[in-house]
Image (cartoon, rainbow, N blue to C red):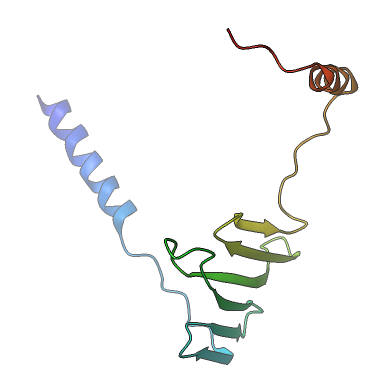
Length: 134
């Protein structure tokens, strides 16, 4: 029973130490900031901070192609910052109702190339006529 009480007390003390508030970082100054919202729903914003973070985005209203559909906002923008390793990370993106969010950046992973044997098999399958339905 003593061991159980000791383990319980030790666990409680370790939990308190882990849950203690961490030292707050000093606020980073905003060097520039711009934000515009137009009556038609379009907008743009941009900001830059003292630690090198930059972001900008423009949104435009895209009219619906049919009376049943809603108007949508098409957004394009970019974000850049310096990674903990000292590399400049830049992400550009676009977002719309047809293709969704499309990020681009050198730091993003890319799929490996398709092995030649698999590509050959895929090309062969695509060359076959469509299967007949029963």
